[in-house]
Length: 229
Image (cartoon, rainbow, N blue to C red):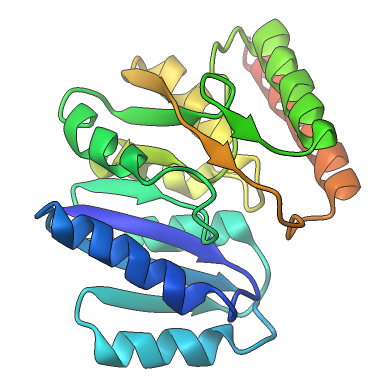
């Protein structure tokens, strides 16, 4: 079974439409699934909408955390997931849903599946594209990682391979990088595929704060690895 995991923050306007679209896509393909939405600190009507949906649909589950912490939302969702495979999506569905089809097939032979906007076609702001490329280059230079996308959405994992790493994962957005690094260190099989992305809406993250955090997080990871050596 596939567990579709969607962390959200203040997404009352699009939550129901996105969830129903994902369910319809999976139902049409005959894929056994559950959709799990984890709200992390939402202050709008996201929780009311989520609980109403969960009361109406057996395939949908809604979880809520009191504070904003997307990494915690991911970890909580994985722990609660019932499926063998966990697919992480962005709630705005800015990347093509065909990624789910690839996940259902490729995770039979791999542990981690990375949907890469860099390898596909992307419509995003120049600032976000350049910022992502610089970050990717940094992970290659300092960690010898060849992953070309560390965003939250369009990532899929074999749940059993994730569980040993959950406890130590970053509580913010650095957890995707940590999982890719963990997969490399443990000899887990990671596969990358190109995906198309059309993401033109305003980010839910403060981009300056997010950029500074990402590099500070990389520095801390680098220091930990140096200390172990």
